[in-house]
Length: 285
Image 1 (cartoon, rainbow, N blue to C red):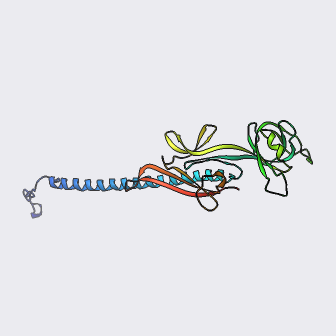
Image 2 (spheres, helix red, strand yellow):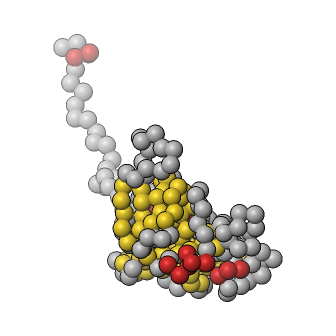
Image 3 (cartoon, rainbow, N blue to C red):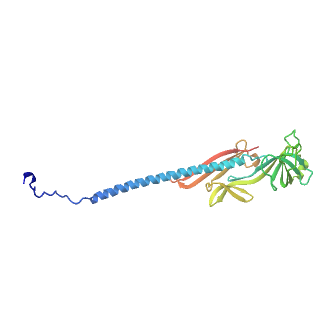
């Protein structure tokens, strides 16, 4: 046997230092660090969720008050205080008479019972039971004797022509109650405007247990925009031409409207998320 092939004999065993693994102290440190990381991550998630909720409520509240102001502005800018369209004023509601249709008189028959007026329609639909106001110009050379005559549509006839018609124009004749005595002292000339109205009250109403901007007509309440704040969700202030507050419907020239939402969500300081907008509406003379 050559020296290269000689059996080297048994090998010496490597020294052993114990079984592989983690000590209890190492496990405790890992558990503590993991808890700290999880706690910080949870806090970040909670903070982000709160920020998202606050922003969402702010956006929703802003959209709500803007939509409510658009509804009120569109209705109130057509109201005429001098024409008797403002009926009842309070800080939390307003009752108004809103124009729904318009026509121009081409034939005025005050001798019939009830009086009859043939109109050239200029918008809207005419229905029996409509409240109407008819402009009596009286002396065309003077504005001091002008007056709006008010009555109720008792009957409607379609298709009666006006003088000079070609036969294709749409015409409507209305028979109006409650004008008899007024017509004895006032004159309605051809071309006089006739307006029909609906009476609405705008204010807070309850819908599904929450306060909404609502419109009430003949006792029927309809929610429009909301929800709003429970107590101060809507506020009206009525101003005269000099900017002073007035309670006389005839003197009102501008209405200041404030709408406010109050969410059940809270911000970082624990305060309810609120959104409020105030605007002014200038009324028609």
